[in-house]
Length: 76
Image 1 (cartoon, one colour):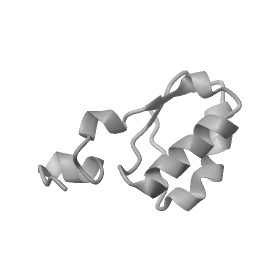
Image 2 (spheres, helix red, strand yellow):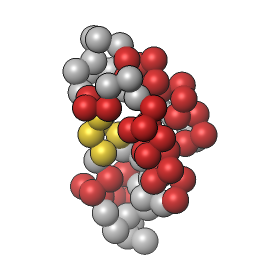
Image 3 (tube, rainbow, N blue to C red):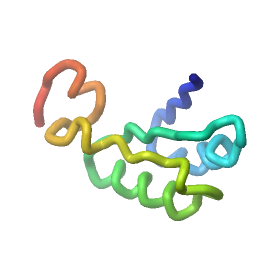
Image 4 (spheres, rainbow, N blue to C red):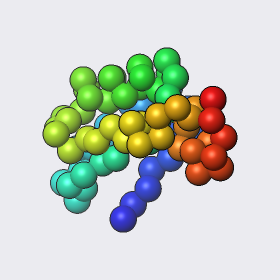
């Protein structure tokens, strides 16, 4: 599988062509559990050509700032 890393949630628009790419059936979003992560997730769902391909994965690491903090076991 492919991985696209956005260094900042402000770059969410750059993900849109990848979401539209027919080679990708499912796109998992591992964004931060903060206001910026919420805003970027919302914008991606609202602007994606096919939002049914998107899966918001933040609930898997709820209580943690982000996926990395969850992997390290560092709660908020």
